[in-house]
Amino acid sequence: MIEAFQLFEKSQKINFSPLV
Image (tube, rainbow, N blue to C red):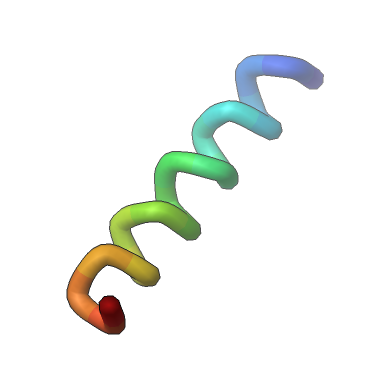
């Protein structure tokens, strides 16, 4: 569960990276 959450957080960060 934690691994999946970490992966989701990483994906969100990558998606927000280009936005900023």
